[in-house]
Figure 1 (spheres, rainbow, N blue to C red):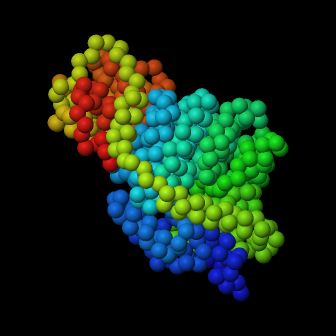
Figure 2 (tube, one colour):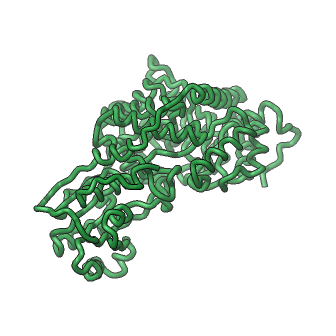
Figure 3 (tube, rainbow, N blue to C red):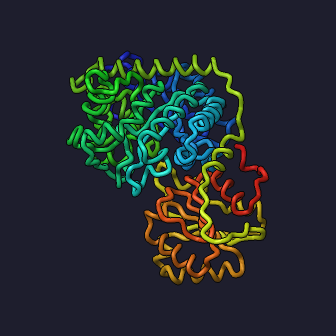
Length: 519
C-alpha cells in the first residue's frame, strides 16, 4: 500500500500539483472509480493504451467519462500509426508509419496523413498524442526505433517531423515529439535496459537534434524524453533524469546553446527497465521533475491506484524534505494544466474534413518493388511463409501484421504458416525450409519478413528458400536494409495492415479497394 501522507490534506495545493504531473494508465474500457476520484482531487492527465480501446464509440464514451470527472484534462495515447497503433491494436493500422512516409518524401502527404489521424483521435476525445518519433534511425540495427523513424537522414526526418506536427495539431490534438535527444543510434531497447550513446556533442548537434529543432519551430506542444545515457551531455544520468539534457539543452534559450523549448516535457514510461531497474519509479519520478520534466508517463505496465499514490507521495515527500523545489513542481503542474486548456480551445475550433483513403494512398506510394526476374502476378491461392521476429514492447504482440489476411481476401484459399527463431532452431533451418516447401506443394510462395538484416536465422531461411524456389516473392515489412531477394521483392517500409493491403495488391495486380482501406 502507499505510504501515508501524514497531516497533509489530499485537497491541498502541493498534493494537487503532485497529482497534476502524473500521466497514469489503468485497465479496462471504462474508468475505474479510483481514477475518477483522483481526477477530482487534481490528477490532470490520463494515458490510454490498447487495453483501454474496444471501438471508436467506446473510446469516445470513455473520454467523456474522464472529462466529466476532471474537466480540463489531457487524455493521451501512443498512436503513431504504422506498427505502433492503439486505436486499431487488434486489427492493424489504417495508416502507414513514419518510415513509409519518409520513403515517399512528400511533406504534404505526411501532413495530410497526420491530420486525418488527428481527426480520428479528436473524434474519440483524445487530446495529446505521444507522437511523432523524431529519432534519426542512424543505427540500422536499432531494435526499438526502426520503421518508427522517418529515416536515417536528419534533414528528411526534420521536414517530416514538422509536417506531422502541423497536421496533427491542425486537428486540435497536441503533438508530443519523441524521444529527446534522439533514440536512433542505440543497439539496446530502453524497455529492457539503459542504452548508451557514444556520440559527441557535435554529432548530436548535427544529427539527433536537427529534427527536434524543426519540431520546436513547427510548434510542437510537448516533447518526450528518452531513457538513454549520453556521456557527452551527462555521464551519470539518463536524459529523462538529467538537468543538463532537459534544462540545459532542451529548455535553455537558443542564445545560450539550448533549443529554447517552452512547452510540456513528458517522460517516456517510467516503468521501463532503463529507469525502474536502476532508480525505481518513485525515485526516478522525483529526479525527472527536478531535472526539468513536467509530466510523468507511467502505466504501460503499472496501471493501478497504488502506483499513482506512491508517485504522488514520493513527490510530496521530496518537496517536504527539500529535495525537490515546490516552485519546480508548481511550474510543472501549471504547464500540464495550460496544455489541457489549449487542447480544449483548439479542439473546439477545429472542423477537419474526413480523408478516409489517405492511409492506403500513402501505403501504395511507399512500396518499392524490385523485379529480379520476370514475374507473373498471383492469380490463385498462394502459400504465405511469415518469418516472424519477437515484437518489441512499443509495438506489442497483440497487433497483427503481414499480408496473409489481405492476400486471402484477394485470393481465397491462400494458406499461411508462421515461422520463428525458435522453430528454426528446433528443426534446423534446412529442415524448416523442406517442411515449408512440402506444405506449399504446387502453390506460389510468398515469404514475409521484418528486418531480415537484424535476424541471421531469417536471412538464412530466405537464402535457402529462394535457392529452392527462385520464383518466391519476398515482402520486407521492416527496414529494407538487406539486398532485395526473390523473383519479386517488395519493401513496404512498415508492417501496418494498410501496408499489407498495398503489397497484396502489388502481388496480384489487383487494386480493388477492400475493407482494409478504411478504419
